[in-house]
View 1: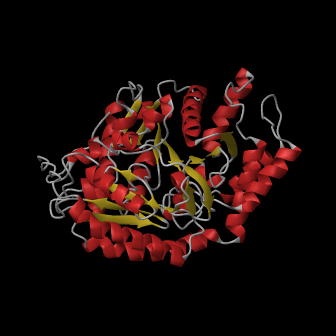
View 2: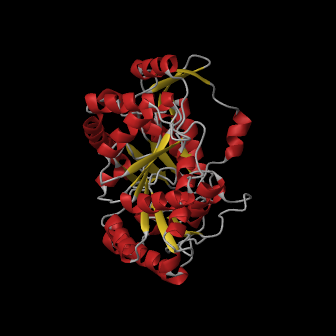
View 3: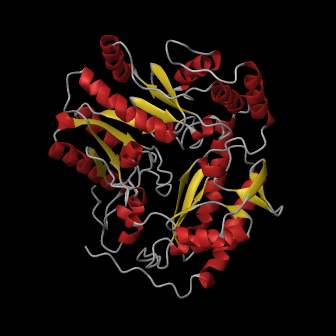
Length: 464
């Protein structure tokens, strides 16, 4: 696995240790959540918290949407289980597949249902190998993703993930998985480099990797439109344009992981629309059911699907599937979720509320411990530092973020820090007053943070 070069004066530790210190959580014990209402959840003691991460980036409609509960109940009473093996199907999965194809930002041909983003990306890796064999290109099995990417935690999808915590002690990544640099200009841009120049350099690095391994061996590139678990990394200007130019040049499939970005998060229905990405395959999950039921889906275009169909006709069966893949209750809930998003115009609402949230968060950019405020739509992050000029964090990676997280919990806000980047990802239903409440809570945290980090040793400056 390749690590990107570290620019002079940047914090290498951030790249190497992307997670919070788990021991602190083990010592304090779990926070037991017992119920939810709108964008809020309540613990066993009855205390209310603003769920600033929508659970795990997923509860788009809040924690008490009765229409989703009713949709699940109706389906339970009608057909509580159904599968798609041996030429069977059921109406909710058929209807949802048709709906997803109609919503796709670029032409898609077929949909395959799985249960999570991890399963979906794992399935895509299998189908990519299947497709390459069908095309008579058995060497074209290598895949490229990015450092700090998150694509899941199964054996194969964790190999796509570019976070060392998901690799260490697991003997990962597997062979044929390669990682190129993350699109984080703040941390990895060189001194004097513009965003456009940085984007070009990242594309050149990708091309160099392809040429080193052999273009005829590279099957696909996986990328999140906006990186989520890697720290809410928003791509710089021209980044996706340049990356797609390289992929087209070498006839490499593009897989867009929309698990976090999909269904309105970036202010458009899909992140691909926000960044003019034209994928061959899309992965969706999380907000597809507002987190109320496990479900994920793979959308693939004809370029991806037709060789797979030809190979299946030759063999006689596609030897892959999951018992609960396309579960009727899950697909019924997804249909109702999408219906609500459309009826309430929540994508446009997310764009409006997102612009307001981003404008309010931008005021924190002058805080002495805030290195960067970044985001798009209703997803954002504050990257915390000890030294604003040198962009240094603490010697212990994630130390500032962990303290900030504790201070937020004390103020009734639940979120998650990825090292020293504190994420913000409220439900799509959030209103302006609730955004003010959330941002005011962050303001209070930042006012308390300088005293709380006294004594933390700064990280050493990275060497050029």
